[in-house]
Image (cartoon, rainbow, N blue to C red):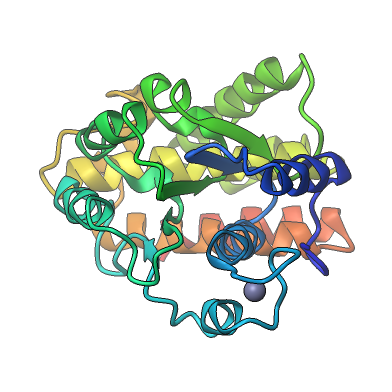
Length: 292
Ligand SMILES: [Zn+2]
């Protein structure tokens, strides 16, 4: 299981043994690594849950084949629509309605919410009841960069797994460091010269993990600016000064372009063989959007 996917051994072992003992939680949060890995992992767990073979996923039963072709009727994937900035409560309600129905093929219904950080608080709240009173034939799998982008009430009702590096006690302070730096970087991008902006980015040229976390936090902050620009109110980060700066000084088109670029960099960072070069490109591409 999870061949060719870069996930930690401890994650692999805990999922495999939970599956063997049929003890997998009805609500999983998969965080860490990159978006592509997260969704692949989620799909493979879904496959194992619907598999009718012996060692799950057997990769040879009908159910596995359907799952691998993304055509299994009991595996549902919800993600943010391309033209939207969030996953709205209506989509979650639809999902909940489907969860009440018995699985088509009688084994398990799996609902994957890809990049769950895009659920607005209302959408996340809509999940709580079903997380609290799970039906035995249903499993929810939420993926996200960091579970800290989800409501505490959601996290506390699910079992979270980190696919990437092992998390330890320092994880939290590392997170907030990345968050502070991301906010500073947004403010710098809006207000400062290209030289100063470049200087700030140099600080994380040696730390891939930090670079990635800063980028994820910048995406989250930019997302909030976009929400304000489109008249929305449900912010993940609250009305922070940096968000207002971005909202007021960047056009919606630029803010959108910024988000797209940052998301692209998440992939670039993971595959980067020369982090210095990636950081330099990061600074110049981002600044390029500002002055475009
Ligand atoms: Zn199978």
